[in-house]
Image (cartoon, rainbow over all chains, first blue to last red; front, side):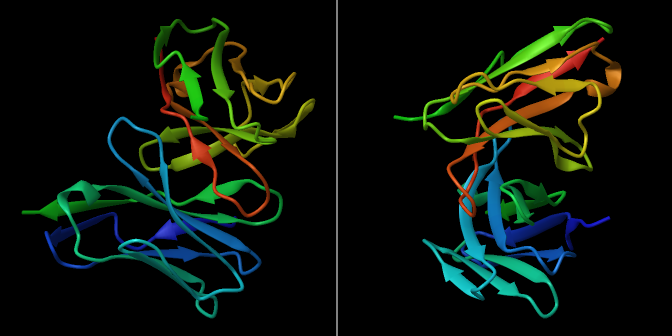
Length: 111
Length: 112
């Protein structure tokens, strides 16, 4: 069936480096995508979203890129900090208002 | 500040018992969702609602039910708890189409 997946289950980066977390989605008709951050023991927290009519969106230290040709979504975190350590999920929306989530990528920031 | 709260935060119950998890949001959002989170599966949708008296099944709805009698609350009921329903449960709400969903802090349910 349709699914959202992530290429890397764990990503380790040095503090201050840039992080890139990737996500592949399988449904070309999905029209909205979100990145969430989840810290241990907490609920997912919204980071940034992008609609399918865009290919790039920037926030504070984060950028989301959408490549509809290859159905690929990425989250870039600039100057990664220890507080960025968490699990990151991408999610896609296909019709209605419900989101389908990937399995997550663990980001570890090394000092 | 508006928020979404879940209760209880932790619960242990016995197989076969009926359990209800509460979810309350103060944003006046029409859309509410229940997910379960298990290792290796990410977040999977159990049930969702687009407004009062509206409920819909998600991908893993068997053994669960919800009701929406007002805008603020979407309680999740496990009719007869099973060990396979041991999980962390998250409630979420969103305002409209193509807007982010806000999540509660989660309920860790253990069925023994």
